[in-house]
Length: 293
Image (cartoon, rainbow, N blue to C red):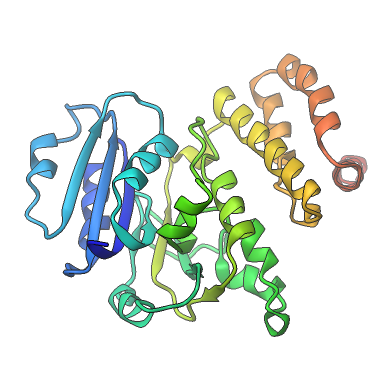
């Protein structure tokens, strides 16, 4: 291996935030950064600047396919030459403890090291009490019995974990190249195949929430993508006897009404077919209760 760590960052049209993310990572001989650009607008991104960025062990890869973050991450995985893989979203950044983490976990025997994060509002930098927190999921785990199932199957964001590249290659695990939720299947497969797991005790990643983020879009193709990914993941979780960690699709299904009632109604039979009965009962009970109040 040429490096101990490879940091993978997919990017599209947010160069200032990308640069902030890159600059939050220490320059080290054992760390490589690969940025894969997903067909950014040349009026927004200065390609020459990033291609010639004065930075140790830095690669900037252009793609013109426009296939999204999953495709970009797969491209980077194919180029990585390291023991460990880390991920970041271009609009996020690392805490001041990242260098300590890279030193502390260099020789870890784990297949996956899960990483606590903090979430802030991008407009005012104030902390937000929202989901995607490893520190909350760890409370659902039984560490004494080495049971990390909540992390294995519910921690979907790739930046919540550092992964052995050998694990990814051994099981040929790839990101789905879909419009949204490209990381869910990838993360669930990693969790399923990982033998040894550790959890870092300190926060090294800062997630930002901003307007215009893909996560909060109500576009038809994005909602349908999230729903279909959920169906695929839940089918797998049912097969391995872990359906209690089901991937939530109810909210996305209801959001289809905001686009078109006809779309919502035409997708309803599919939703009821693919969703386990105990989940349907839970959601319908909650919906009716709140509608009747």
